[in-house]
Length: 67
Image 1 (cartoon, rainbow, N blue to C red):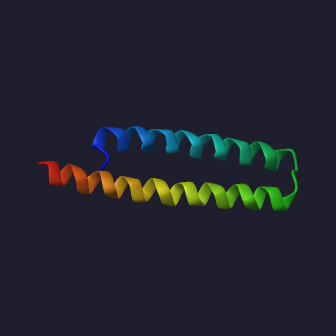
Image 2: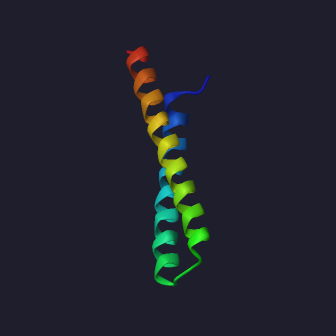
Image 3: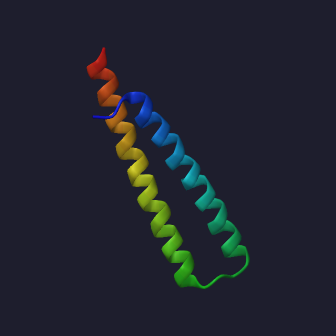
């Protein structure tokens, strides 16, 4: 069982990865990188976003249960 603090730290890490990937996608787009690579990066970004949203819900539930 993870604590809210450890989940929050993991959330911050995922958000940093998401931001970095967003910047990479922008750079790759401007450099006219292959569309397949861009598509894969966008899929990875979307998967990260889903994981972030799920983690936010878990944290919210844990915080309510801890009160």
